[in-house]
Image (cartoon, rainbow, N blue to C red; front, side, top):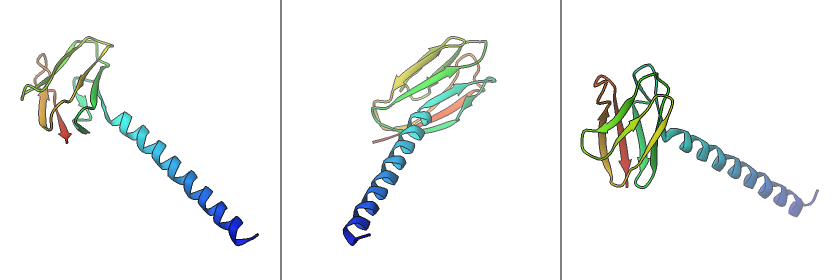
Length: 112
């Protein structure tokens, strides 16, 4: 095998690894923007995203929930078995609760 062939093979291998890593990072990122409402709790309880990204709350319980920001950044109502979303438009740390079940607490950290 020539030096040029080895360099091409090495470059192709590096490109494949980089592409795979980028795809995995994208999948993790997409998953991290969803919050489950299950067993009268938010999961995860804290989420970090960027300005302009969307958070979607998925209600797996048999009762309605809300995700209501204490700082006024968002207020979504989610019927049982449904989802609702909010676009994060400004940076900051936003604590939120369910208005119907105030023991449900979460936090969205929005980075610039």
